[in-house]
Image (cartoon, rainbow, N blue to C red; front, top):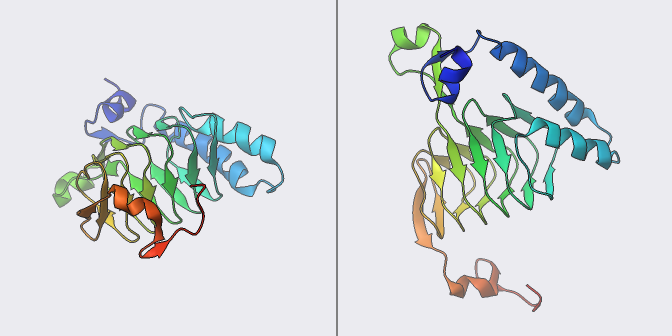
Length: 202
């Protein structure tokens, strides 16, 4: 296998070989253009983000600035929204479901380096895929580490560092991030903590 094949297989690889720097440079050119677009240039923004990402739904919006390593390893479902300063290190697949909202300053890292300093100094790195389910809300300043699976209908609280899988239907917070309670039907009537909706069209 060449280094790109090793990277995509989750094996140790060297990021400066076999065309990988050229691929990263190409996506940096596109993200730079995307991040500098006039806010009124909606048509170009939509075309460009679909060129950057590997797979998208019909409806998506990513606020600038947005940064990624390769772009084509990122798949997002329908009705995807990401706020300012989303960073995705997609040396492995990042698969995101439908109806996902991401708050500002979120970092999704499939990339990592060996623990032992001699191994790390060899230049080898790795990528392990990340999966985010449907109907997920990720709070501001969250970090998601390699290999994590976030289930459906999950809320990740602001400032969390997600190092392990989070099951479906959970609110999870902290560093390291842990489930604190299940989301239930009772939650439907509240819009924030104990504040009840005063409308009926939700």
